[in-house]
Image 1 (tube, helix red, strand yellow):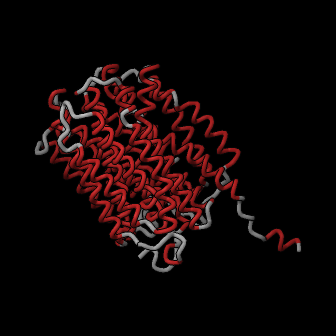
Image 2 (cartoon, helix red, strand yellow):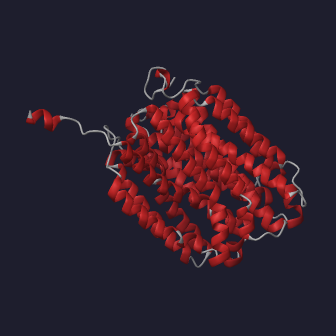
Length: 477
């Protein structure tokens, strides 16, 4: 009797405990998402405070997103190996300390370096939070609803970042957008210690240091070329050298990963159309979101003379659309599968981008706000089906890596979006900024159209059906 009691597996956590774990992880993810976009609305003020132009300011955003994207996969693997709660708490500490350095930064160089460290801390939060949520929700339908809530909070954080940043800058200056992280980090650390259980993967993978180094090099070179290309010239010797290095690093990464028994990123997964298109779809969604947010900030503040608070408030319709539609999208995924919410996401995003194709100096504010609402609705509908499809494409024992691949795609999309939007308007005066932004809005519409491709490749079955359960036969094919 005693032996069987000792060997019995621990009872699953109660429903209240499971949803409390989700709430704690969502708080930390809110912090990561807000910091991805809160700086956007403050870029003009940061530029004036540190005496730098748009070109240099792109690195303030992309230093964070590139490092975040580059380290997400290894952070997920470390969490699976050493314990998800342990890595999660370490990430919160690094993120909080780097935020304090950002708030005190005396120059652009220090700010960019601190933002990079901040991204390293954030990389320990994003995939690990999703892994904790996935492992806490054993039922596929409950997990789909939880991912919908998680995506809603993350989407809300991305969308309300500019609003929060505008309010803080108006009241306390641009440094306050980093000071605000301190109380959130302290609260999250306490809640994680009390409510989040420790978990790890059954099989701990060996670290893939060559793959990690090459992946980081690929991302840094790719985004660096996008940012620096307009300044140095796309056909300049420096650019050509960058292309050669990028090609070599990419080829090296593919060769290393295909030859390793336990690669950092299993590239063979991308042979499966649902998984590959979901990852590409996540990239496209965040390209569209970040192009929209940066063009909004620069257009409203430079071309129309709005304050940071007013330009941040203009994104409220985007936030409203994201927060209302993300839980709805999660419910639709649970009942009907990912295809329908992806079609809705593609339609709304496409129309939102097309509405601003002819943006001018005097475009009506209602049209601008309506376009932002459509883009926010598309963003809200997209995240749950994309996340669920990507996570369901890998075994639950590697949930940290599954979340990391999806999150990497998001942050790569964010970095690309910032680099492209900044490149379009860099060196443009206020009078020409609206016209210079037209290709950006076309790109937003193109990202929406790509979601139709993702919907076609996704499986139409609902999460609760046998074909839709993670690990079920045929799920990953």
